[in-house]
Structure formats: structure tokens, C-alpha cells
Amino acid sequence: MSRRILTIFGTRPEAIKLFPLVHALAADARFASRVCVSAQHRGMLDQVLAIAAIAPDHDLDLMRPDQSLDALTADLLTGLGRVMDEERPDWVVVQGDTATAMAGALAAYYRKIPVAHVEAGLRSGNIHHPWPEEVNRKIVGTIAALHCAPTETAAEALRRENVDPATIHVTGNTVIDALHWITARIAAEPGLAAGLADLERRFAGRRIIGVTSHRRENFGQGMQAIAAAIRRLAAREDVAVIFPVHLNPNVRQVMNTELAGLDNLALLEPLDYPHFARLIDLSYLMLTDSGGVQEEAPALGKPVLVMRETTERPEGVAAGTARLVGTDADRIVAEAGRLLDDPDAYAAMARAHNPFGDGKSAARIVELLAA
Ligand code: UD1
Ligand code: UDP
Image (tube, rainbow, N blue to C red; front, side, top):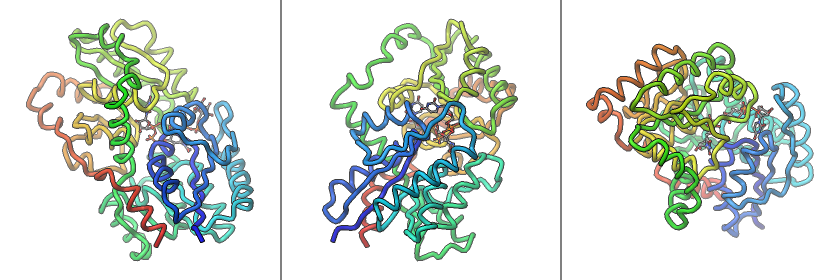
């Protein structure tokens, strides 16, 4: 009898980090693999489903404009519960720390279905940074029967919380599997990531700063400060900024107001994954508050300045490729300026590291699910 696995996700980063596992499960006769998307994100999720060629078995289509956390969570809980009652899986797989992951784990727990948590054990130690993700992942961690920790640091965080050590496995982060996969796809089919060529020509001779920003805890003052910092950096003669703007209206409203009409700054719609990988490649440095970008940039040897007060991914900082710079505009400009003006400081950060995995994480998780 093949083991029935229901993999659940809803946002862009979950889709990127789970497609390698979905591919591996689908190719393995030991499993009957089913996929449910909550569509907590719509457009940004669909971009990933398209490139990874995943057709979900269930699509709850839950995204609402500027959705509140409580309404989203309520819809997720009942919607995902219904799918579990229909599918009756042996395992539910969730990833990371989104509302979808948290509600998926809770609905499975209510049905006594064991949960496998991919990217388990990330902790900032502060329930308000990142918000609400720190609490989401602690809830999933309390419920999960299998914890796939990306690093030894993450495994240790779970042991400190008295999670049964027999259920914790260091698998690496599937984000590196995804990055290897997309790099190979682009090498075979360069047209997949050729859409930035016009910007490359427009910004020739300038060093590119790639930017993303979307964190809820930065809404308001934090986002205003980030916008002010980017504006000042884009005023430099030797710099151009490429900023694909997240679809969250709280981000777009600020960035589209504060950063419109600047010569050396391109505000773009969210890039699909191959084009975003290309943007990291083109960039001299990345400026971000994203979790996933903190993992991808070190793997590609690009310095990354993290516009957050805390990080649950200390490995990039320890490896020297990432630096926490907070959301104070002066600090962001100063730290970016240091990398732009001091070649030694730049060289010290611009080295490829793979603290987050070797690209074989999905294969390890498959074996754990089979065991
Ligand atoms: C969510 C996750 C966050 C993750 C981020 C990745 C939660 C609580 N938050 O944050 O952990 O880091 O995704 O990007 O789970 N929207 C669109 N189209 C899209 C996506 C979003 O229009 O494809 C807009 C909608 O108006 C939506 C809003 O963005 O209501 C917020 O989306 P939501 O998933 O609730 O939160 P994010 O801020 O995207
Ligand atoms: N990403 C993308 N297009 C973009 C910006 C980001 O494909 O325009 C990818 C990026 O490569 C990474 C993931 O989205 O894998 C990060 O997602 P996000 O920053 O939205 O969420 P987080 O990782 O902070 O949860």
C-alpha cells in the first residue's frame, strides 16, 4: 500500500520550498502524493506553480484583498479540514511559518493525522519579530511528529524546547534544492530569465542593488524608513535599484508613492522565480527583509543586508554573507554605502556559502516519510 501524503501550501515561498519535495514524492511509487493549495497568495503562488508544473489536486482559492489574519486563519482551518476529511492522508506536510502552515498543522492535529514540518526549528526568540511567523512556527513545532530542520542550529532550538530528539532530523533547506533546479532550468533554457535584458542595458555601468520588502511587522514606520533609505541609495551616481514589489497593498501603497519616478530605480511587479534568481545574479548586493532571500543570496555569494531587527536565520550572519541592519534609514544607507565604497568590506561578504543545505534535502525528507 502506498503512503498517502497531503502536501499543503499557500504562499510564494512555501511553493518554492516545497516544489522539490512535491516532484520527488510524485516520482516515487512508495507514495500517493496529493497537493492542496490554500491560495493564501494567488498571483505569486501561481507564478511558482507554473514554472514547477504543479497542478494542485485541491485549490481553496482563499486570498482576499488586504486579508486580515483572523479571517484568513478561520477560512484556512475549515477549508483545509474539509480537504483532509476527503483525502484521509497518512501524513500532512507543511512548510515554514505562514498562516497556511499553522492552520494546516492544527487541522491535521484535530484529526490525529501526523504532521511533517519542513523548515522546522527556526526561532528569533521574539514573538513580535517576525510577526506572526514566530508564533506560527512554534505552533507547528508543538504539533509536528517529524521535524525536518534545515540546520543543526534549528535542530538545537527544537531540542531546547524539549521536542523528542528522535523526531528531529537535519535535512538541509529545500530552498537550495529549488535554487539548483531553477539554475539548471535557466542554463538549459536561457529565455526563461531573459526578461531583465532591457533593464541591464538601461543600468549598464552602475552597480545594481536588488531589493525586496514585505514584512508585516515593518508596515508603517518601518516601510517608510526602508523607502527613504532606498531613495537615498538610488540617488548615487554609481548605483541602480531593481525592486520587484510584493503584492501586499500595504507594501505597494508606500513604495509606489515614495519611490515613483526615480531615474535609477525600477519598481517592478513580482518577478517569477527564474527572473528573481537572475536578479540576484545581476545584483552587487541584496537589500531585503525576506526569509528566503537570506538563504538564496549566501548560496549565490551575494552580500545581503537584512532590514529586520532579528533573524531566525543566523547561519548567513555567522558565515559572513548576511548582516542585520534593522529598519533605520541612516543605518541602511551607511551599511550599503560601506559595501559600495570599501572593496575589502565587500570582498569579505561576497563569498558563496551553503549553510542552508546541499540541494539534497527533498530526497532526505522523502526517506524520512517512507520510514
Ligand atoms: C505572507 C505570510 C508571510 C510570508 C509572505 C511571503 C502569513 C501571515 N504571512 O505574507 O509569512 O513571508 O506571505 O510573501 O502567512 N496579495 C495579492 N496577490 C498575491 C499575494 C498577496 O494580491 O499573490 C495581497 C492580497 O491583498 C492579500 C495581501 O497581499 O490579502 C496579504 O497576503 P497574506 O498572505 O495575508 O500576507 P503576506 O504579507 O503576503
Ligand atoms: N521571489 C520571487 N520573486 C520576487 C521576489 C522573491 O520569486 O519578485 C522568491 C525568492 O527567490 C524567494 C522567495 O520568493 O525564494 C521569498 O519569498 P518572500 O520574500 O515573499 O517570503 P519569505 O521568504 O520572507 O517568507
